[in-house]
Image (cartoon, rainbow, N blue to C red):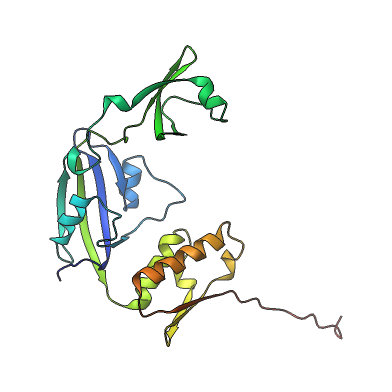
Amino acid sequence: MSLNRGDFILVNFTAKVKDTEEIIDTTIEDVAKEGKIYQENKVYGPRLIIIGEGQLLKKLEEEILSMNVGDRKIIELKPEEAFGYRDPSKVRIIPARELTSKGITPKTGTRIETDEGVAIVRSIGGGRVVIDLNHPLAGKTLVYDVHIIKKIEEENEKILLLIQRRLPSVDVSKFNIAINNGTLVIRIPAEIYLLEGLQYIKRGIVNDIERFFKNIRKVEIVETYEIKHENREEK
């Protein structure tokens, strides 16, 4: 089954730095543990990719478009196809007080927010800090092992996968969704009613629906509260 822009697909992949074999990202739990990048709060498994959405590097997306469902392929990206080459002019020396005055305590190897963007602290000494504004993978050739698992056809499954992308640690099978006359009703599970940032997540889900489903004109996100009345006579 061939692929086209706009397709929803599930993909397993592992990305490595070619020269060092360092694993930098993966959807496979055992591989993450082997590469010592495993995160307990991360849900592993095939990842939703919407072709043409822009969430992939351009060259990687082009290679995936040439694949079929079920295919597995090793894709090599040169620096100019990935995160570019290192630019020495992006290495800066700044006074440490410039960071501490903003409540930032610089530590070698950590990433910090600066006025020019995200930077890595390379060294600290003599009241000065060397920061590097290059992308951490700049100058590196990357190798992706990509396996196209499935192409999603059903509308309800697409919506659930979009919800999962916004709530990666929640079991989306507990959501109930229905579409009727252009209205999408999403009933959310009680366990996430008090989730921090839930209102922003809801807004993000609505934005996703608006972007990818032109047939849906209204979204209702429903929270249902069950009231248990006390039996006063028995008491």
